[in-house]
Length: 294
Image (tube, rainbow, N blue to C red):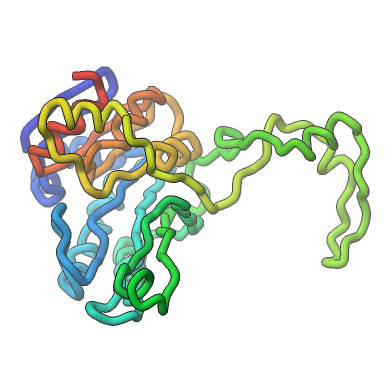
């Protein structure tokens, strides 16, 4: 492992996750990580520039990470792993490799599944291209799963930290103080108190809508000015922001073992969380410096 750079709150190491497991830092962090938030290489049936295993080789590698991640978590810590869908090679049929890999990870680590989230990207390009835009026999695949796991049924979490702004109709309802309460066709009995108390925002759903379409971010400007090829699979800022706010407090430790362009670290820095990231590719590390004003 090699320290690539550090900031006020965090450090990025040039390292694979396997090298990290064999380093003394791993032992120092055992039981201290409050949130592992990461998007590992997806279990695709084709090779990508950023590197990924395929098929059963991926499944076995992925599930082998679980016991090590389990040891890193604080007693009330959480893991959020983003996994995309995969398709059978040269076929208009979906693969269950992603699902099998997740289930193997969950079971091999003995984790509790707290909740499933969906990231819907409304700006995602149509794909798989052959079946969506050429033959027109499928619709575009525009979401990924984010799996929330923990060692406990009640990890640290507070949805008051991720409230959304009330809709105009809800603001009007709160102002007028009137609501058509009573029994619904579903047999739920809704009372006035439930809906007429101002909680400073509405509770979000487990579907996160975020487009990754910003063309002139500091990261991209930095890469362009320094002749650096940007990471091809960057996540939007809003994803780590939601989960870091939801599942941690200032001063907690956030860990991303597959940092890529280090979105997780930059969001954790802004939210005053301590963070540690790993990334083996020097080009991606150099590009990620643009997120911190180096």
